[in-house]
Structures are given as C-alpha cells and as structure tokens.
Length: 162
Length: 160
Image (cartoon, each protein chain N blue to C red):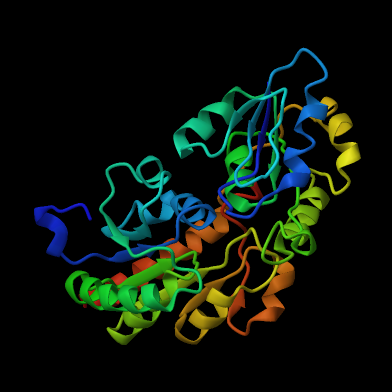
C-alpha cells in the first residue's frame, strides 16, 4: 500500500481490477477516470507500476480466483477502504477481486459500474455475482447484451476502430 | 524479429511453444516467452516470463507477434497498431480453464483485427504473410462519454 497524507481523503472513483487483462482494460479508460479524484485497488504484479504510474494504489490479497480465504480478507479490506474513501462510484472490469468491493461499495451507498472484459464473448462468473448490485453494466460485444438483463453495449475499450 | 508469447497463465501451452522452432527457419530472430510449457524451443531466445515493461519493449521491436488469445496480450498488440497472429488456448487440451479464448480469437478474426490460427501447421505461413500495421483501435468515444456523464451525475447528486 502506498501511504501518503492524502490516503484518508474521500474520492469520487474507486477503481478495482485484477492484474493482467482486467487492469489493462481499466487503465485504458484513462480518458474517463483521469477527470475525477480516485484510488485504485489491485493485486501486486509486474504490470501495476507501469500501468498506473503516480496513481494512488492499494494492494489487496491475491490470488483471488476461487480463494475463499482471500475473498474473506478482501471483504474486510473493502469495508475499511470504502468507509475511509467514501467513493461515489466503484468502477471495475473484474475479475474475482471486484466482487467484494462492488457489494461493500453498494452497501455504503456507492454506485457500481461494471464493464465486462472484452476477452470473453459471454458473461463471466464475476459479472453474474456483481450484476445484482450493478447500476451500470457494460459488455464489450453486442451479441452478449441479451445474456444479462442490465447489460448495455456502447463500444469497447481496446477493439473499437478509431 | 518474431515474438511468441503465451502470457502469464500457469497452464502449459506446449502446442504453441512446440511450434516455435518451425518459425526459426529463416534469418529472422525468434524470441519466445514460454510460460509453464514443458517443452523448450532450441532455436529461439527464450524467457519463461517477462515483466510487463520488457514484454512491451519486445512487442514494440517485433515485426510480428504470435500470442495466445488473451485480452492482455491482444490489447497490447492492438494498442500499438499491430496485427497479431493469435493462437487460442483450448480447454480440451488443458491449455485453458474454459473455451473463452476460442470464441474471442474467432471474433477477432471476423473483425479483421488479428490472424487466427487453430491448426499450428498453418502458423509459419501466417507469420510470413502477416499484414504490417492496421487502423488504430482504442476506446470507443460513446462508451467514454456515457461513463463521464454517469460518474459526473452521481458526483453532482452527492454534492447537492
């Protein structure tokens, strides 16, 4: 965890993603998140410093996939972080790490924006678990819209032609 | 230079790593990141895993990138305007936990964003004839504008 005096100040955006493709996609939304006060939650990996230089990053417990122990630890961490930072919006691209942060965020009054990874032409387990608390749920393939009731398609983070 | 990368998965992708030497027939250097593979190329510069920055540097230097159909590898290529050759990992061969790489890879091929290889005997020819460069891809303006408007409206309501 990067510690600084600003750590306790509230933020508009709490950005949550597992490392790899999920974090790469969320970082690709720079045009969006750079306009708001923000903090990030991810798991320690070699891509984090490169993708998020000079960003305020909080490291959660990995690995997150099918680990009930880390789900419990990250749920406790989510309560601590959300109570301190009071985000207006939790925005996430998955995967398993997002689940406790989306639910805890919603519990404390934040809006939840979930963007399904474009690397899957379908609906992931994380998406199904977050859908009940998602205020906005985007998918990145038009044919996937029909697979989740709240899903909408407005283009992609990396595949859209410029 | 030809770069072959199988990503950070802890599952072996022996089928692609085993085909690396078939790409090293000419004078062009081949660099391979082989991950958890149980086989080692004999005629390539090899790494098990590469830190993100180093992988980016190899991608930017490569004439062509051959990668698995993972969004991290694919998006890294697309964001530098490159047309990757994509080999989907298959669940039935123990290369992946499900078949999402196959559906994703095929859709990339349909969009013309990548050359998709399911039969490795076609790999060497695909690497020789890969298109150089393509129209840049990136963030959809509509998606960005909707997210900006939504987050802005939530913030405004909270400040009221």
